[in-house]
Amino acid sequence: MHAAVIVFPGSNCDRDMAVALERAGAKVSMVWHKDTKLPDGVDLIGVPGGFSFGDYLRCGAIAANSPICRSVVAHAEKGGYVLGICNGFQVLTETGLLPGVLLRNAALKYICKPVDLTVQTADSVFTSGYEAGQTMTIPIAHHDGNYFADAETLKRLHGEARVAFTYNDNPNGSVDDIAGVLSENRRVLGMMPHPERMAEAAHGGTDGAAMFDSLVSQVVAA
Amino acid sequence: MKARVHVMLKNGVLDPQGEAVRHALGQLGFDGVEGVRQGKVIELELAETDADKARETVTAMCEKLLANTVIESYSVEVS
Image 1 (cartoon, chains in turn orange, cyan):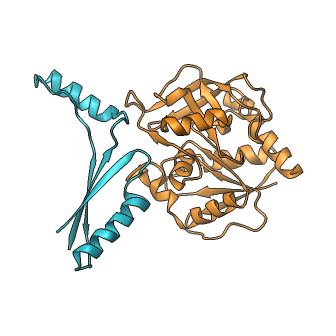
Image 2 (cartoon, rainbow over the protein chains, first blue to last red):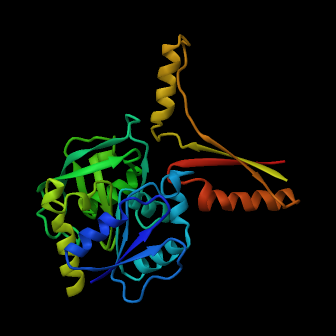
């Protein structure tokens, strides 16, 4: 499986994401935001965490309009896989690939700590290594992770089982405790928690590893 | 010419920053502040000289980048 990890000025989880993907067996290419073309044969695009463009204007807004993001959107529209973590989730909502938006945390504080999540659906290449209803511990590290979408969008997300993860103890005010959502074709996932920071024993836990393992094995098989 | 864009959170979207400002004002003794909403002002210097065209262009900028219309509304002033 060939993955591309996008690097924006201010990305700081790009290498963590690459390491997690490589550990699971993927070949990883790092792609600079000013590039306009993805490497040939890319199966998965990773949009990493960080503070792209200093969070200017809105988190993810400038990155979502960078040259490479046109290729990211085109890849997703062709049915390609995209994983956005933290700032990557914010970028994907700004491109319109995922619905909703991430607002400032309800308590206005930056939060960096492990949190318990519940897996809401195992029906995606990202979550098939888990069981629906399973609890996992994954760190969050964000100032703007307060997921918001209008009532109609939420109804659709719930109806189509596109809420991938929820917080057990809502840390940031997200509507319906939502921590991650899937696209309509279930091939784009955005989530605020960082599975790549909980992917090997040295991280203090390995609950995030199954995401990268199932991604690599299933995307290859597909 | 110049354009000024006001971006505000839509009604119904919780504004925790505005709420924190309201709370701080109350603590400073400013009673009776019933609501605070915080937004952004963006000023643009444009080469365009036709006001209608400028307004049209800036509106397109708002839709594409300056505002996220999922949660924000905007208004454009041209002068």
